[in-house]
Length: 139
Image (cartoon, rainbow, N blue to C red; front, side, top):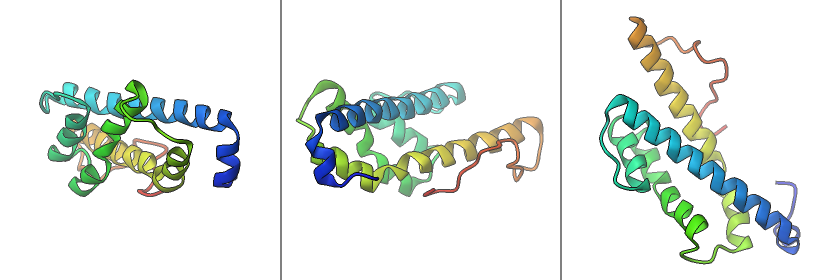
């Protein structure tokens, strides 16, 4: 991130823009999870947290990653419903420390979908060239 924490906090627009895009990213992550669960018949999520839980328990994402990101569902609710004030400092720290979780989620989803695509086509399951942009976890 190019801005220092002090620079980020000094301009209210930084917080508003970051909060908006973070909320949209969280909602997209949860929508993708819900869609996979529904299409594959992996269960019936009762809330946002259970979307992530079902993805982990059904092998869509690794269990340790599931445990790492389960708090995303609650964070989404905080942003949308204002259950607790989210501060500029908190958003800044989250962007500095946890933004890579989104890329890691994308990696696991693409990996799962590629494997599912190969299995449906009768392949070996080790063909990952179906997706032109498969990031590695943590990148």
